[in-house]
Length: 362
Length: 62
Length: 166
Image 1 (cartoon, rainbow over the protein chains, first blue to last red):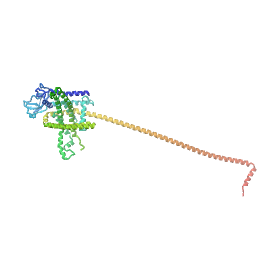
Image 2: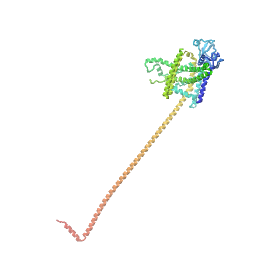
Image 3: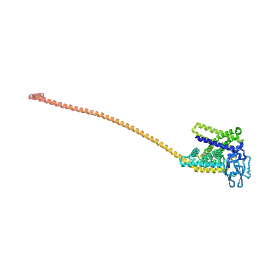
Image 4: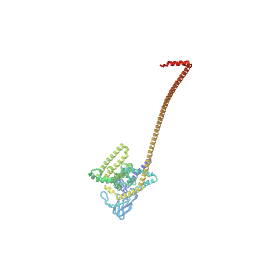
């Protein structure tokens, strides 16, 4: 017990310390050689971190503009498949020329440009240049793949351990109660004893996938997969389609012809109910996205206090304050990482349960 | 500017709601400690719904 | 909202669908199905064991109840038998007493009867004897009285005197 507590605290220290060091020494991607100093730069840095990235950068030397990390493959569909390494962008500093087309990175997105990399920007800073379909193995995609490999490896070994005996060994001892937890505390109470089995695959996968990705976001590797709107839209879309396709007669009856109320009310309720069909998964995707984004933002902002308060309190005091605030908010974020996975799965189960429930009492 | 005022209003509303949920849940738990698990689950679900609402409003207003 | 839509990357969305479906498929096939099956089998076996233990306990309880019932019955029967035996003994005793009394009475009665009969017989005998004796005495007296003819003649004369031929 004591040893786990101590190693847990050490791990948390590491989780907080590493981005601290990175932030302290990282520079703007512009490569002008200046250190991050002003609040605007910090904000830019955080926003940049929250976005997906086409290369995997662990550390950037502010003085020399030298990046430590590795490029990731870029896969574009733009009148044919174009595959090249993201190193050709040089972290957004240069224009990549592929088969006579020019592409450049702007705010972590790939735009089609001319040979000089000129962007047609509007007042809000959005580019009106064409965006090719981008199927690149970005940092987020890499994160998903890692999470997938971890899940398949971990739970595959748990599944295999049952062949040896009725009780799992090693890692399985930790994973098995989690599986039972999802089954007994999330699926069964919301969907029902009889029908839950069919949806267990999705619920378990969603729960562990989100949780692992959330936890990966807490590491200094800087993944922010569940903070990508596309990812949460996709997950919520799965819940939406599973709910609609498993909806029974009574579910659709409650949407299009609510029983037990006068006819004018029934007609009035139809658009409300149809809207409700979409707002439920919308709330799901927004909640996950906003929580993870806000979490990353808060942690990084607190770490950045080290820089913004340096002038008032001196280096040591500001570092100390930033460290302790970031440390405790990181502990809360560890809880949130679990809670968001739990709530996503819980509400998915609730919606599915509503769709498959038998309303015999009406 | 208006965005920020709106965000503040959302946070006030959400805070009141969360306070109500948490407070009532505490009351419920202190009244019936044996139902703690059920009350907590229900509390988290309702808090999550409220959170979804508040975040939805924040993002729509952004 | 605008910012969000701008941030939405269709490519990432597509990759996410692809990867998620792949993970879903792999996990369902290689993890969830065997895990849930094993859990179900294990839980069922535990449930079975518990059920059978419960059943055994119930059986034990009924067995014990049966034993107790039997014991109670046996005890009752024993008491019954004892009571019966006591009753029978009593009744036998009573009967014996009664019999004895009756017999005694009868014997007394008989004895009395016998005594009476004997008495009567004795009396009769005595009477007969007395009569015989009187006769003998009379005879002897008569013989003695009437030994000489003079006396006989006197007697006859006496008789004749008495007899009044008128």
